[in-house]
Amino acid sequence: MQNLQHKNPVIEIKDLKKDFNKIPAVKGVSFSVYEGEICGLLGPNGAGKTTTIQMILDLITPTSGEIKIFGKEIKHHREEILGVMNFSSPYVSLPGNLTAWENLATFARLYGVRDVRATIESLADFFDIRSLLHKMTGSLSTGQLTRLNLTKALLNNPRLLLLDEPTSSLDPDIADRTRKMLLKIRDEKKVTMLYTSHNMEEVEEICDRVIFIQHGQLKDQGTPTELIEKYGRKDLNDVFLAIARGHNKGEEI
Amino acid sequence: MKLSRINGLIMRHLYLYKRSVPRLMDIFYWPIMELLLWGFISAFIDKLGMPGFNAVTVLLGAVIFWDLLAQSQRAVSVSFLEEVWEKNFLNIFVTPLRVSEFIASTFILAAIRIVLVTIVMAFIAFFFYKFNLFVFGFTLIPFMFNLLMFGSVLGLFTTAIILRYGTSAQVLAFGFIMLIQPFTAVFYPVSVLPPLLQKFSYLFPSTYVFEGMREVISTGTFSYPLFWGAAATNFVYAFVITWFFYRMFAYVKREGKLLRLD
Image 1 (cartoon, chains in turn purple, cyan):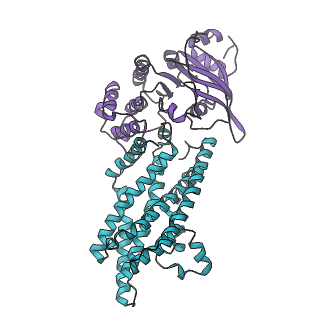
Image 2: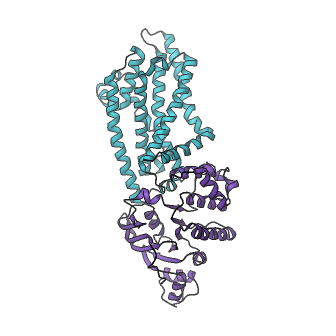
Image 3: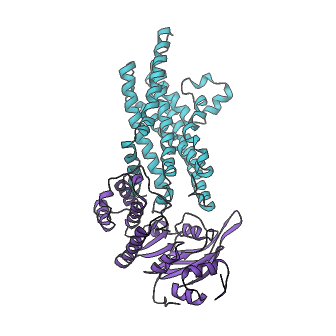
């Protein structure tokens, strides 16, 4: 396991549980995400990843457990914590009937950004979307929307980013550019990221560490290399299959 | 509450309105059509020559006031529905935005909307029917403010119901206000209603407002008891419905329904 002792935890989840109509969706998950890392939150469909992320974002109230972000409980410090974190997902669209600029200006105000114009222009240059700012959001291509979503996600200069399958609907070229952009954001802006994806090749490339969740429980965690070694597999995709299917080290999938 | 966040949400809707003809029509089309229709009916009733009854002033005043109530209710509900239709709820509630700021922004949008509607309707009423709403000076303004408040609170109530039951209940955003119309003495005095319904009608702040409006228009005097009746019932509605909205919001967060509203 990589040495994380010297790093500060940005997210601390302790014994987090969520039941929907007495059916458990998350069954006592505990993990931490450390400063400056890109941490993958992986698991099959219905594993509890989205519910966990939505609890971190305070969109779903946990049944029990503790969520601390930057050392503070989200339920008591929601406004302060959400002010220094952000979220991006291709499944959550910005209003298509506003221009890209109008959307960004709206969210800049919601995050209390002081110089709205300068912030948007600087980020638009970073993501190379300046020429798109006055186009209707609904008319943008998937790749352009991804960049717009990421621009929105950086408006408040966040210290923590939650990214839900950010490259899921992109072609390989744009997906590759997006990953490089995310690494650049991490390196230049020192942003910690919690990242979900079903593309294990991508996770291997971008994530410093991964956490596997299945049936609402934490199954394993470590660096991609550690887990590949631990499960005796050739890549993280096979590790995913081994964990999802309950196979032991070296056992044929 | 942070003004920048309230301003952000208001601007988001104003951006939308400035280029959307259907949305502008929703604000102006129905009030204008209703005003024209009732204006001609009033003119016809006036021609019948009923002594002591000025149909134009009484009915047109009622139509304008009724539209203020309906518009403020719809403004609040539709501001919420816009976020649901555009699947923007997650985006706005992962910002530091508070529920109270969200509510405040919808109420301010309702106020902006009714100011616009009042100006347009007052102009048309004067131009077509020589009915000058402003001749009553400031005496109608406290009643108008009560209508804005009650309409907004009813909008918050329909929003809470849509939150709880999803968009299958969105018809309430457009039709809910009609449920109270027969009982709130919009076009006729409370005394016309059967005795039991008279008591029921005073459960609505709008009843005091319409009675007060008729008194201002017919006698030129401002009725403090009717004003305070409207204000007191409004306060109770605002308190109870705000509490109800927060309960529904907590419920959808607990059930994970906040993002599955469509």
